[in-house]
Length: 476
Image 1 (cartoon, helix red, strand yellow):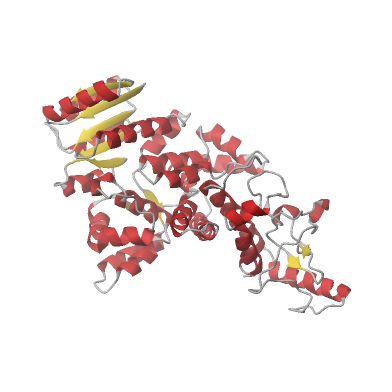
Image 2 (cartoon, helix red, strand yellow):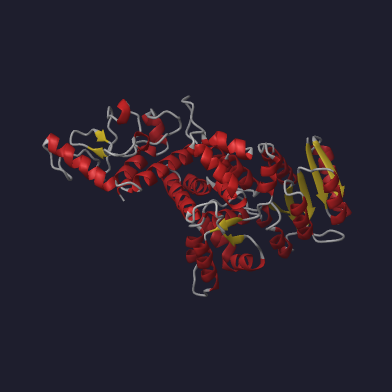
């Protein structure tokens, strides 16, 4: 049973909503109010899953009512219904409403929005976390990115391309821009998945108004509990995952979705770092002690970071495929035959980005050259670029069947190795001082070495991407 409170100044609008619920939403517990004060009193006396408010009420405007509702009952999903001819109300609703719909939207859109919001709320098993997520109207950005955006928006010579480059380098800005441009209020026939296209559609003037008159962009203020460079590292990892995920799929439409999902895959962790850094530290401590991340996050927060991020993005009306990829990107493939999906691409990209970072933070280039020279001397082959090196035409190393990894593990014909050198006889050799868990990525299964079919790898373009990252990203 979904409990919904409808608030509007127009009795005719409320009558229309009442008919819609009686005819098509018999499983809803619907309540109706004309005034904001009366609606707030109802919310104090009885909890509601969702509140749907018009932009004008008899005693206050809709954004003011939603702001007070956010303060008193942040766990309630807030949906604003605004008139197409009142863009000011839509702008004022952005910081306080999870979604802004047009009053002219179809009943199907409203019903689907309410039901999906209620379903996601059920995934959060902690009242504290539900309230925390309900309070999120924006996400924090890196200070340098905000300064750059402000300068670009104030520069008459700055182009949309300049603005787009800044937005696409920041997790929070990207999420908010996509939320805005895909809001039903704009009435687009299909969702926009390309961030550059989203910036172009909104335009410089709209973005300038958003930064001046609303609270959709703000700076990240690090807690003393977190390392000083936490936000920089978080944003950099998100960008790396976005870049890799976009390379793991074939079609341009899927590339946009994969890149966006990769950029936003850890947005749940950003929410916790911003709103409850002590909880983030508790999770980190438990994981450092050897506890699985999913268990630690669920115990501390009532949900995992991917579920938190997926819930927030869905509340914001984000593309469903992106929401699904964010929510499910940690899921392990059980090995049964199935077609690869977008969450698989984000899962692989996340693993590769972590492995790449771990290797970059150690003396990889030195250890790799030592291993190559030693092996070359033993085989009697040149140490650099000799004819014994097996590589494809682009110079990318081929994963070789039967190559050995640390602790006696072996790679079969379909296995994926993401680090190491190629010896003169074609065998993939890991650098001497790289720990076994850093010599491969856990792809779709929790096992140390992953056995995937060639058909699966090629269908998502993974094999070529692994070759590329073995030969370039790991050596930078």
